[in-house]
Image (cartoon, rainbow, N blue to C red; front, side, top):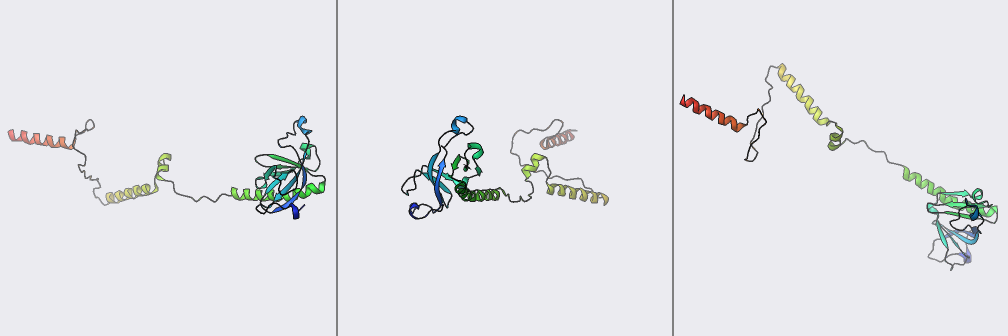
Length: 219
């Protein structure tokens, strides 16, 4: 039933939208255990607030602190609980943290609660669908590091290599020499030099030429 008059909560609380007496199964009851199925249900006064808080207390007095609260914004299901509990007019409120079993005195009462609670369930499912939508990923060129790791070649390098090959072919066709000429600058700091076996470094060439000039002078 809608909550009005003396049953309204304190002014700082959210606006109540529905309230009434229900029976609550002891929290944590395992209905798969025959020994626990016979546990006594407790009569509590439930209040549903517009922001999704469902509270239950020992009585309907506004000054009475609730014994528990269920956040309906986290509700994942509201199901018929009669098959599990063996109790008529019973509902199971499912959240990630717990399951709450409630029971009405008659079918009309429990149907009214079911209509109110499933509003939040539908809203939660719609919000979940919106969160699951993923924006399309734009195609981007792979980074140089990624191409090096996968063995791919840079498009710009391939284009440059092809252009250079065509340019050399054109020079060959024109009868021109296309032997590459390299300009070497001595940028290495002074120190011992190392040359691969069978190769001669530039200073060694100069020493050989100097020895040859000395030999020619004495001959």
